Figure 1 (cartoon, one colour):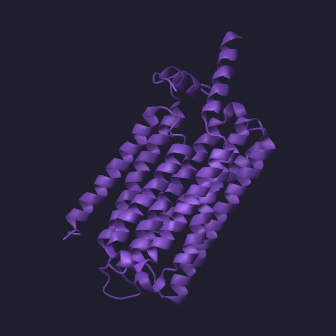
Figure 2 (spheres, chains in turn yellow, orange):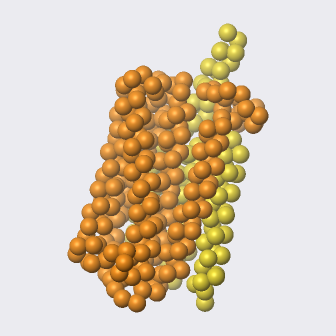
Length: 106
Length: 207
């Protein structure tokens, strides 16, 4: 009985820790606005090569928002974040290594 | 949140583990981490072959950014409905869960319809196939594998939707939905990268 009430208490506290539907909606709107900015920036020809870092930052921001709020990494165990972002870092290294190997930056 | 409460609430649906975390959720995160590397290598392959096609059509000839922006919007919205489905289930609102998870599956299917439309246009109108040039090969491989992930996700979501009518989806076993949600958000994340790297960079005249 004591264990059950403890579990229920824990479940309830977890639900309070997770964002409310209003926060989810705000995150979704932010994602849509960032995507609109990405597409808008894409049509500004004066930016030339400056468009690359702008788009990388904007898509990184979207990536982070989805991970932190929708996948609850902000609220969950740090071990989950480590496993996932470990994969992301390795994937980035694989990308850079392949691109260097094939003389992409030359 | 302190470590004790994290460890406690992770065990809500499961047996005790040495980490205090549910093994299924741990495995899902491990899988997603490894899938990052899988997509990372595919994106790198696309990038290193960018601009190396000897014959057309080229990205500039085929990509329709406004249409792809709409499909991106649909996928982003599906992520929102997925978290709302999970939140509804945790509140014990099964009807709300069904509405949101079905919405997610429909939006996922809509995204796939956009992709089928795009592929058909490329093949029949622009004569771009995987065999034509390096762009075709790397583009269809990358976006096709992402589409396969979305297809699997839609099947998973629909199975949860139908399973809920048999009483198989309850707040007590919400981890089952949480795992599907993680997978779905990951598919969304990958598309965020593909949309920027393949579509926006692909049409950028500097490359």
